[in-house]
Image 1 (tube, helix red, strand yellow):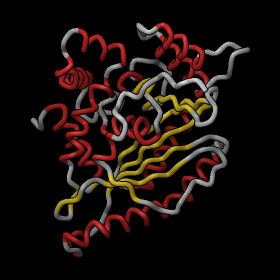
Image 2 (cartoon, one colour):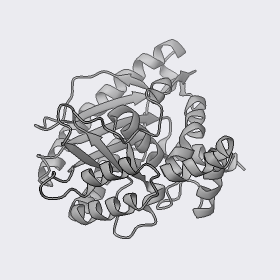
Image 3 (cartoon, rainbow, N blue to C red):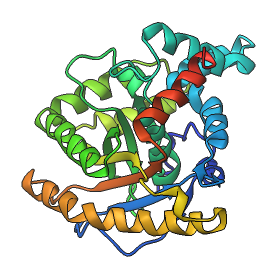
Length: 306
């Protein structure tokens, strides 16, 4: 079996230091590979603690922003210690923190992180790179090697939405997926061509990636389209009712209840779009006040809260 040569940009297991997974019994009831996974952050005195999340963002924002060749160039020039700082400056030059369409939204960074580290799909391009391409609606595009078959890959198109209500996040996600689906073939070609235009010093790696993304008819087939969703929402728990020790247990119970309330809607929307034969990878994360918190977190990341 051929070794999958495109490496992840994040160290394996990075997300485990920040996000706690909630085990549950719900599933998407799809016949192809899929998962529905819920997480939560550290909790301190009946609030989510965003300290570890902010550290995580500082560590990974450089890899989110720059492509692999740009990272190598910065390292070769002796700038390895300032990659994240340079990335944040460039992100801020594109627009305000958390501004839609600039690649500076919290959900877009977290989508990249979950697809890379939890799913195991190295990035092709993140939102901040995709903003320069026309007719591309995805917030991320990743390449997933499928186990047991070195000729079988999925191109995972991602969308991210952080709003106060989980049901609204689901609704927004499938509106975005409809636009991605309508231009799926063209988007795959645009992303593949742009990714392969990057400078690869390793000619063997370049040839390997061409064989996957632009295979000849006799040598293979294109990666199958699949979809990744990151959904953030407000936990909406009355903190005054619980002690500090009780609160984490109540958060877990509330997450389980919240996903039960939307899982049928997710299944129905997949069916309505005729996407039952696609793979879906869904990640859900609650915040205290989702829309307020995501802006504050990105503002502090990019400007120091000034």
